[in-house]
Image (cartoon, rainbow, N blue to C red; front, top):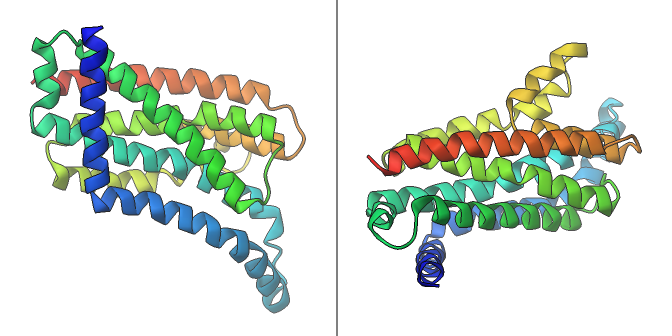
Length: 245
């Protein structure tokens, strides 16, 4: 009981940090705003490109939307969670857990679960706002849940390798570039597409594309869940080592 109260207390502190940090709130608001813009921008851009250049953008709607909802939504949650974890490392809050009834792995497990839930909800919220090139809602919910651990994994990586917020910003820029890997794999021929599997969101993206095209998708979701669990396990160990230093 005491450990539960302590975990709730630490999570409450993290929540207050989030509310007070305009940068982190701004990132979330930006993504929601971008989703609302895409609902109008995609058909307008498709009509303009077709009229002016004869280029058909419509076949790429699923690629664009899946990048926003499957990759960027969990990534945004991961950035927010990563900065909060890093701040907890900097002010020794995480280290203090080593001498409290709360085990550090227990706290990390709870926080990771919160990030996964937030990533899945943000994915579904973005999809509902955009409202275009979506698979049926059943597969979409499965994709959202299977793809959300990628965001939590990114948070653990960022908070585990960066020593301060300046370093974290560098890793944020690198991560934003790496986030293009699953979408970039779409254009690679044949077996070269498997290079996208280096990114944990690749499997959930494949599940999204398959479900949107009416093809079998469950296998991709299972693969996404396995990949997400593997990344979480490896990066949680990385963070725990950094927190104990």
